[in-house]
Length: 307
Image (tube, rainbow, N blue to C red; front, side, top):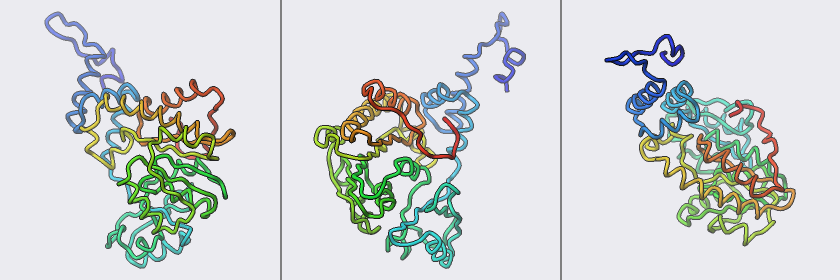
């Protein structure tokens, strides 16, 4: 309230009645918010630098609000309305996700574990957050194309790409860690994906080993996770600004490698689950400066608000 009418409401400091500065108030507010909501102070300061105090408070409060569980109907095996009908018969309370998704369902509550139903085990759906559907929609893979998912595990986006391609063409599902690819392979088998090749390589090398090889590339980059605190509250105290800086270096290397693996005229989507400018706009700016022959195109998603 003081900051909204700062001149009229700010206090003075004894003994000489010097007016308190705006910086004093902002620093105090950041410390209080960090203590109240359980963050390390440097993260709140990072949010302040990005959003300002008012939007930071809105974001922090929204990050403490639980999200509905979301599943993606696997149209390789079932139609969404038939899946919804089957789950409703099991007592699951659900709705279509949103007008922009033809495959998403949001689950409010369920008398049975959603990850252990006969429909889940039969590959009729994938547990997948609403936001993770968006990069694949932006990628817009077409039938019979050659597509690379650079950071594929555990296979949610890869399987959605294959679903949109109706199991035609070829999808490279790559990830750095072999152990994580076990889940990818399991999910692809369960979902009935037959056009995917699972690989385990350092994504930073793909630009050299697969130069100009792919029609479309998805890089859902490793990141700080500052955009999914609602899903993992430990991020409040486990991420530092130094972690963000180290991640940015990797993101730039991966994006550069991906652009080299892309065919001339191809499409690449870069996405993260972070709200940090360092990991998003600044990484894209770096790529634009390093590769003058690339350009930004509209992502084709006609919902949400501009950042």
